[in-house]
Image 1 (tube, rainbow, N blue to C red):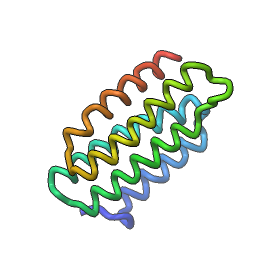
Image 2: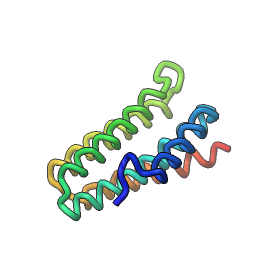
Image 3: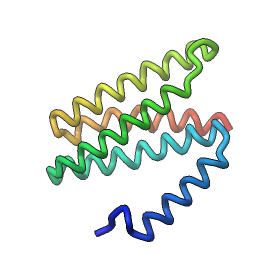
Image 4: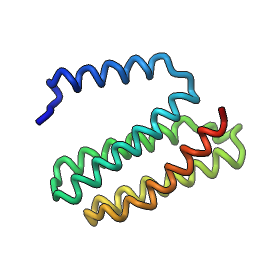
Length: 126
């Protein structure tokens, strides 16, 4: 079983930290979206295994990522795109809480769909 003192986890974190430090805002959003999808998958597994403590930690990470994405929006100058993303991120936050309270991995599916669509749109900006 891997833990936070595992050398592989330390390597992964160091690699992620280096990528984040070198990332421009566009790449940072893409990294956050990818990280969110990965963490939602972990949360789903914890829900299915009824590992409530791990589920809580994982859902909290998801909420922090969504908050990070939301905080990067320029609502004053971003127009309708920023407003729409803000509403989507708000929906994802509320749905994450609902999924956690109900311990329902299927309640994560709409979030995955939303984030995958945002991710696809973001990839097309290149």
